[in-house]
Image 1 (cartoon, helix red, strand yellow):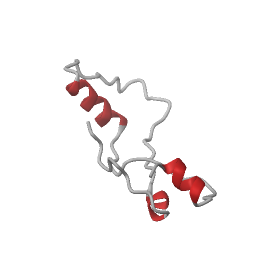
Image 2 (cartoon, one colour):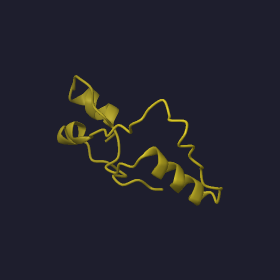
Image 3 (cartoon, rainbow, N blue to C red):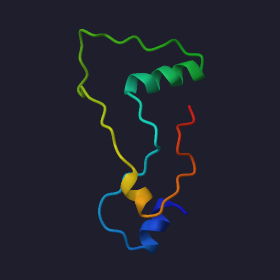
Length: 77
């Protein structure tokens, strides 16, 4: 069942995060993508900090507790 169908059929209210169970930083994600496509890795310039200095960790426990079973709970990269 998709998250939207679950929310509609159960009349869920509020904010539900539909994300996989794996968390990784932007740096880890970009490193994996570059490796997957055989691209040169990203070179990070430490002298120029990004606009976001954090990587938000988002939980999917609320939607899973409502009955959603993730088709791909682990990242495929």
